[in-house]
Image (cartoon, rainbow, N blue to C red; front, side, top):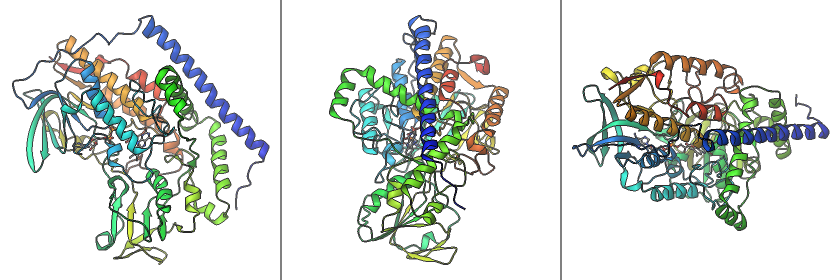
Length: 547
Ligand SMILES: Cc1cc2nc3c(=O)[nH]c(=O)nc-3n(C[C@H](O)[C@H](O)[C@H](O)COP(=O)(O)OP(=O)(O)OC[C@H]3O[C@@H](n4cnc5c(N)ncnc54)[C@H](O)[C@@H]3O)c2cc1C
């Protein structure tokens, strides 16, 4: 039976309630931020990092560096910018692509954009007054990262079209030996530190349970490996998956003149409206002249987004309010009861990634679009067959089936040749560092992903921590650091205990946030400001050092 929708008065109350919680969080958050800044930065109670520099000597081996960075996305570029700020040029970035950008170089599917407003989804130290929209589109985020690369003089450090294939800690030399491949040629690079910014969403995933893919005679590609030569006009196109990339690309593909667009959905997502618009020239000039205004907007967006932690993590009753508003959004856009049922998730709002779009519901109801909810049984030479026996002829298949989040792609060997895969055989766990892997820092490693805010704040927090660690080591004449196993275990035990009560673990879904055993290895289960505070200083007591 269909749920009875709440009255208009009640809905209005829900909206008011939702706005009040968000506004209160923003006011409290910004006030707290100002006080923190006054006490620690202005009055000088915090440890000043600005005048502290690294004093790195060059090795006689041209293949040996102080630091090797994997990847040139936000993480890798951020790490490189930090190292230069600390006064060293003794680092190399290994990037398997031909350009910088990571996610924003690889994902070129039509409609690709960020779902966090760009004022917040950018480096805090490099605001961009020229975003074309409130939510930046893929090409301009890519351009922004190209701009950062040149402005901070990072390009000369990057080895493009080079892939890291293996990493080994050399106990006797206290160095990492990193094997790379480029143009079929293998090389070894040595580094005292590794900063791994390989990207949690950088390896496309394809379903393993659909037979016959190899028999398909049409064309196909993954959204994360977009084939620009595809032409859709008058074609029968299948999009497989209804996650974050699919809901962005389906509305765009629908407009290309496709004969039929079949959208194969396994589970429907919760969808909320995207408060997007073009940024006016006046606003751009204002941001350029008065950066403080853009900073204030960034802070507002940040704190409003932090307020969702109250329902996702702390399970305040506001979660019922938000759930009602999302259902209202669905009812407003989808009048057909049967279709609405198909588009209604059975789990709580937030359990799977909440998707932000204004185009998804309208697109799915266009005459040339069909939502298929029966599971795919097999793929034939020119069609897709579902378990109910229906056969859908298709010319092009677009896989929008996410990323290999739970399978760590790189063979890494730590102290005494111990493989990381063995250490992580039960579950992936880290704390920026992992025991037995000295001088190795993860950027966006396990449990630093977010379901509610901009990941850039997490990257910057980690870079702050790593900076403090490097400076501490230099100031205390330390060669290697290795996190104490009991500290690491306690941290992860507490983190998993906290996760149990959150919407991501108790909201009634299985998502890509979880591994096959149900452990949540991706999400940071708290406000991001708690993580920022955690990463503010280097907790040297929790490490084993070698001089
Ligand atoms: C379509 C899409 C939209 C997104 N939107 C948002 C958003 O709105 N807000 C948000 O917070 N997050 C979003 N994300 C998550 C996004 O991945 C992060 O925000 C961020 O871009 C991650 O940056 P990164 O540098 O850590 O990783 P990436 O950007 O993935 O960069 C990793 C880099 O490492 C390179 N690399 C990997 N392995 C190797 C290897 N073995 N050898 C050499 N190089 C290697 C890759 O080629 C890549 O360039 C989105 C992700 C996707 C896919």
